[in-house]
Length: 376
Image (cartoon, rainbow, N blue to C red):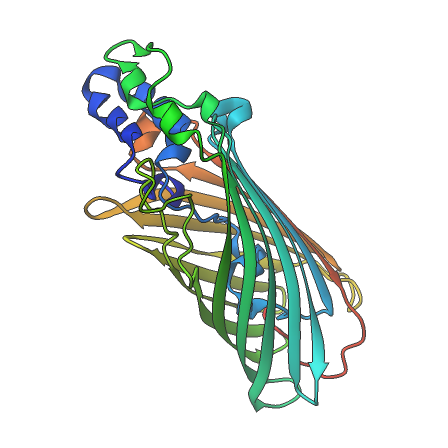
């Protein structure tokens, strides 16, 4: 299962749900776990299957790395809808960035991102606003072929909240009958923490090489949650809370565009997240087909196959196979993807799949320098 299901707080009493697994049944446990999931989360970072269409969430060093002057992006992800219906997990993101030429070859990039995530029946909600900046330095090359090193940083404010009135705790579950008992004593203990505000900091590096107008590659990394902020009102004098720091996260990623012929190219990509005791890998490739009818008409269609794996208590878990498409028309781009669950949870919920939508709009203008950045 994805990173949301794996980053849970083992000190929480809700974890007693798992002790009934031999009598309640796989599907009932699945409902209970997802229902109570936000309580048992020790840390949660959003992720998109179309990570390549959410560059500012991937690495602050990707701010301003584009072929145009300004870029607007929007992402939406819906998960667990077949089980939770209107209470499905919903993640949305809005971002904007701009590049500004510096000297003859270099660039500054500035950007802002707002994203939100609402999880499950107890409305575990995360909101974040962050600002990012980057500097792209040409290391070698010419007007049409060059190598750049980019350094970036970002700072943001997070707010997390939860609705404990809909919470289900382990001592409310009765074997073979499910949730039958009245409100748990745990409710009064934890419901005094409805929301929490904390700051967040990240840095990143990126290297990209432009071979020509049709071929380029990049690789980079970022280090998020440098300050490991607390996510609750923990203090040594408060016995109701266990300290819940947000683990620092290392992101390593790479990709590129490589032309096979005049009309066809492959667009591979991979990203790996390391956060606390957890890791997740998302990788694959798309094939891009150029449908442009003239040099002034830029149209292309992509179709790809991706996969996501992560670790579990022991070993590695294959989580999902991802089908993706993308259509670009001049300044606009639209991406669609569908996650097909291949983990052991498939036995309980064959329809447990996720849908994702991405949109990009570029504001371009005459570019006298001739350098073509990686396309996202």
